[in-house]
Image 1 (spheres, helix red, strand yellow):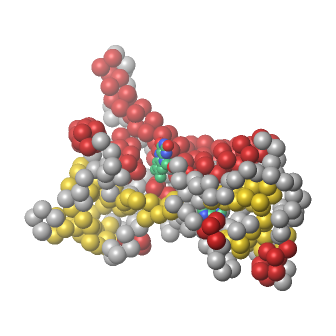
Image 2: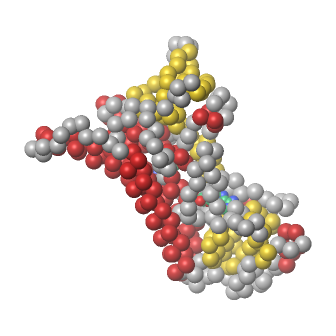
Image 3: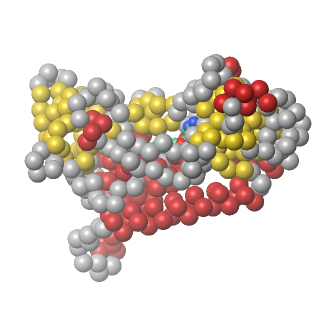
Length: 338
Ligand SMILES: Cc1cc2nc3c(=O)[nH]c(=O)nc-3n(C[C@H](O)[C@H](O)[C@H](O)COP(=O)(O)OP(=O)(O)OC[C@H]3O[C@@H](n4cnc5c(N)ncnc54)[C@H](O)[C@@H]3O)c2cc1C
């Protein structure tokens, strides 16, 4: 987990419960947040798995805690609620879509076990996506309730540092909020990376931040990358019957046991996922019929090739660590991140 405790040193002291509108600029307001007058014992920036667990635990230990969480919409405009990557665009929706794929496999096997299921059984992406998205929304709500129950104050603002004990952000109505705490934890996680050097990548591609929130089936999909996110997404897309190709430049699952990685690839290939190995995309263009034409270089032969897809999903590692900007000057040690 990318959550990083930057300044969690012996929580102490009781401070007044106070949210200030920034009057006279953040510098002036920050000067007012001296030790002993701070709003919270602990402020957690990031409401993902790491941040929420940390905030709830500290509150349980009797500390005055606040969580600040804000989701920057994906370049394609996808946005989601409280709970971070795992809940909204990671583990949870992924496992539900894998479950959909596994059920499809069982239905195919069923006639061999005496079940009279007319084949083929079509899959409805819309229905699956709606159910997955509703489940995720219920988890967003559950997280809010849990924070409330533990008296952890939640702010839906994008935080930036003013100084090492103060962050500021802008609330929905445009009002600037300044929050101070004895200790601030950065738990801002990470986001998928776009290969912006590739023409059309940002304009026409999506990432794992979008795939779970698509209302319509992605159709014939090219997944670019060999990360676990790439393989997992390609796995459930293949499993629900979509024509799915993985394009990888070098080895799959770098950093994982390579014998296991090979077995994963073999298994996926035997279940219908196509692989373009040793290939690197160079261009994505939209054709008049709406399809995406991808051009790539086969690094073994040095030749250029093209293919058409409905969706291009970038899943290249490493993900980008979310940056916590500094509003005023240098924020000191709290600015560090992994
Ligand atoms: C497709 C996919 C599948 C995965 N599957 C698994 C799995 O099966 N098992 C597993 O263990 N892990 C899985 N992971 C990884 C897991 O989701 C992450 O490791 C985990 O969510 C990281 O939690 P976190 O709290 O560090 O960060 P996040 O969950 O990313 O939370 C950080 C939060 O901080 C917010 N934020 C960032 N900057 C600011 C700011 N300046 N102000 C306010 N808020 C801010 C972000 O918007 C986000 O809501 C998966 C990831 C992906 C993408």
